[in-house]
Length: 198
Image 1 (cartoon, rainbow, N blue to C red):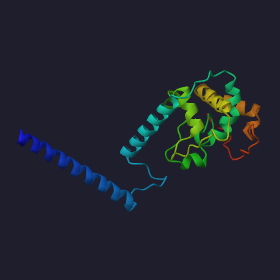
Image 2 (spheres, rainbow, N blue to C red):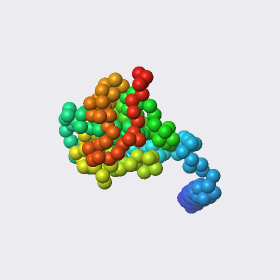
Image 3 (cartoon, rainbow, N blue to C red):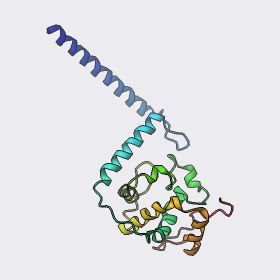
Image 4 (spheres, rainbow, N blue to C red):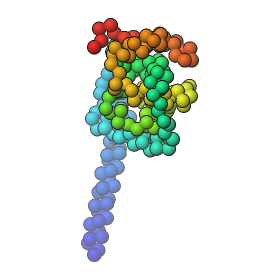
C-alpha cells in the first residue's frame, strides 16, 4: 500500500513538473516574439483550430440567450443596403470583386453565402453582427445600429445563397448601388459590381 502511494505521488510530481515545463516553455516562446502575428502569415494549424473552437463555443453560449426574431421576406430588400454598405467590403457578394481589405485580412472573412456561415442559427448570426469577434477584423455593429436593422441583415444573409450576380446587380441598381446607407454614411469605398462577373 505504501509502495503504491509512493508511486502515485511520484507520477503526480512528474506530471506537475512536466506541466510546469510546458507552461514555462510556452511563456518563453510567447515572450521571445518568435510567433509571427503578421496577417500575411497563416496561423499554425493547432492555433487556428484552437481559436476556431474558442470562437464557436463562445458564440453558441452567448447567442443561446438571444431571443430569435421571425425573419420576414421584406428583409431581403431592407437588409440589402446595410449588407452592401457594412458587410460586402470584407465578405464580398454575388458578382463583386474582392476588395483590397478582404484580400489583406487574416483570417479571411468567410463568404456569407457559404455553408459554414449558413449552418449557423439565426441568433448566432445576429450575435456576431451585433457584437463582432475579437482579433478577426469583424466589427460590432450593435453600438451604431438598431437591433431591427441587424435582424434585417440576418434576413438578407439567408437569401444570399439564392441570389446570383445579375440579381444582386439589379437590386443594387434599384437602390442606387448603395452609395449611401440609410444613415447617410458615405460608402463610396465599397465594392462595385464587376461588369464581367459570372
